[in-house]
Length: 128
Image 1: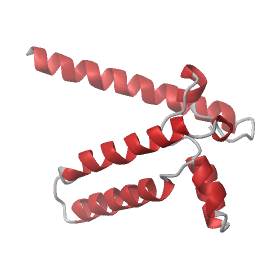
Image 2 (image 1 turned 180 degrees about the vertical axis):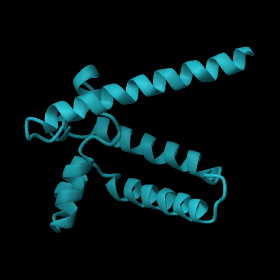
Image 3 (image 1 turned 120 degrees about the vertical axis):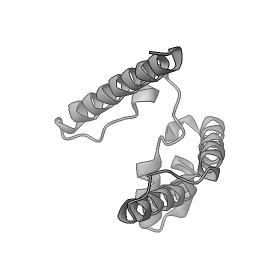
């Protein structure tokens, strides 16, 4: 096996392990009938770009856009990009084509999540 192949195997193992930790974290809180807090925030003390997204969406759907923006100002762009990617991949799957996203989506995710993180870090820590 080549070094590249070993590296890919290593990355898959790390990703699988991190995903298992993430699932365990969420199951732990859900079994206590609580909404899981952000694992990244709990481990590092700083929020991830999507921290507050659920609360933000809840306030937005209730018509309280001001409070929604306080919890996560990038909730709408994140949701729109997520829906686009989901619909794109469903279309590819239904067409029995390779499940790949357009190249520009990586840049779009990078920009949206970077902006969300910057706004989150500059915002009020009470909304983390």
